[in-house]
Every structure is written in C-alpha cells, then in structure tokens.
Length: 373
Image 1: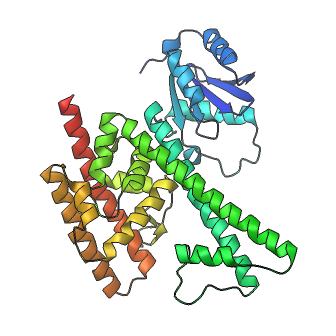
Image 2: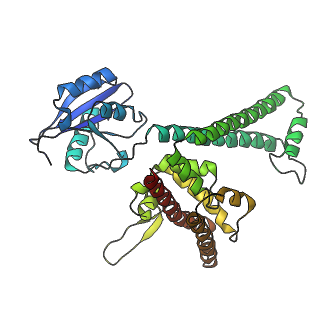
C-alpha cells in the first residue's frame, strides 16, 4: 500500500461537516468544520491535493449517501462505515464533532472500520418505496387499534361471528352512533383515519407494482426467483432485494444470516460456552420479513395454486430448491416443537435457515444473469 495516502474522517450533519485527516507520517489533525454543501466539499477536495491519494470515510446516518455519490463523482474513494462498529474507548467521556472526525480518520487508516453496502440508484429507489409501504402498513395498524380501543372503552363489540375488518365489520362500524356529539366526532375521526390509511396503502402498493416492473432485469429476475419459495411474495421479495442488494456479495450464507441478525449471540470463555438470544444486529427490515415468511412453514409441504403460478417459467433447479426448503423447514419446525421449544423461538430458527435457501436461489440467478450478459 502507498505511504502517501491521506485518510479523511468526516463527521457529517445536516448543516455542517467536521473534517480531520490522518497524514502519511502518522499525525492526525482536525481541519475544521465546513458547510454541508457541494461547493464546500469540492473546495476541500481541491485543497487536499491529488484525489488519487485521498481516502474518505463517514458514518452511515440520516444524511444518506448524497455525500458518497458526490465524492465518488469527484474521483475520490469513499467508504460509508457502520457507526455501531466504530471502536470506542471505555474511558472516553468527551464527544465532539472534531474528536469524532479525528477518531474516524485514525481508525480508517488503521483498518478498524467496517464499510457498509451502498445501494445504487435503482436499489435505493426501490428501498425507499418498500419502506414507505411498510410505514403505511404500520400506520394502518395503529389507526385500527385506536378505533378498536375506543369502542372497547365504551363497550361496543361487534356481533358474534363478525371478523374484524371485513365488509360485515365495516357495515357494523358505519351503523354505530353515540348520543354525545363529542364521542360521535371522535368515532368519525377514527373512521376517517382508518380509511385514509387504507387508501394510502393501496396507492403505495400500486406504485410498488409499477416499480418492480420498471426495475432492471437482473433485479426482476432475482425477485421472481425468490417468489418460488413458500411465504415469499412480491412485497417480501422486493424488500429482500432492496435491503440486501446483490446476494453474491456474501461468500457464504452464514454471513447473510449474521447480516439479518437471526444468529444467536454468544459469550464463551475457555471451556464454557453460552449462547443467548439472537443478536438483532444488521438490517431490521430484512429480519422482519424473514420472520414473517417463516410462519408459512408451519404447514405440511404443498404447492397451492398461487405458489404454482409464481413458480411458472422458473428453471427446474430453482423450483427444486424451493421444494427442498418446504420439506426441510417444515420437518425442522415439527422437530423443534416436539422438543418443547417455544413457537417464537422455533419460527426464528426457521427464518435463519430460510436465509440459506434465499442465498442459494439468489446467487444462482445472479450467476446466470452474469453469464447471459
């Protein structure tokens, strides 16, 4: 490695960027604070000398990847690092922007930082839409809960045999009436929020359908192949692809399992080995959809009509992997339950193994797309 490289650490905020540089000779010094605008960043790059000798890093955060794309366009190598994996001294009780930038520069030069995957424009656009749809689904659930708890406080329960949020349930809601005007206004407002959340969700799901059809061919191929697995339909497949990116960037499925946070934590010393709950590190959006899909493997292996339609046109090797997943995961679900494991623990274990099949299918499709190109 060249000894002339200069390592920059940037502590990025909405309005400002604190800058520090680790010089080739070993000195780490702050360079001050600049505005977080493209002109100031370009001026900083020009000031620091040859761009080929610059290495820049900053922590992933709410400012996204705008700075990464700007520096890359200027010809500067940049890494976005995981903030939770930045080394921290136990006795360090002083935190400032300048000290954070200097620490990033020092750790970056030492190779102690872990870069994160930076999505390209297509992945980032799809991920934004998938996350917006997820937020809308959560808002719909909250709106329904508020209405349900309001009615429960006043002893209003649906008739026997009426399932929640069906057409019969909605007709019952529309027929409700309170004598006091304040309570009637509250009911009307809660109903409006429920309808608004449903309309918003429908609009986003329609936009997601269009986005999937307009996605690049390699992304569409992976999403279609993942839907051959039981429990994975378009929304979950789009979430996996948008959150993970290229599955081939993980050399082994265990690394993808670790990225999803579904592996058990461990605290071992000497001959003592202790494994605890799952780590819940990595990508929470990915972990949520994996657990959601894992519930489908409670049932015996079966190819229903919807699954057969999703598998139509897929290579035989892909459908064989999907069928193998059904047999293995359903069998493992039953064995773990028979051993007395709690159902949530069993589902988490199934989700972890499901990651292996997702990785195998995704890697196979990506390899085929690369060869075809």
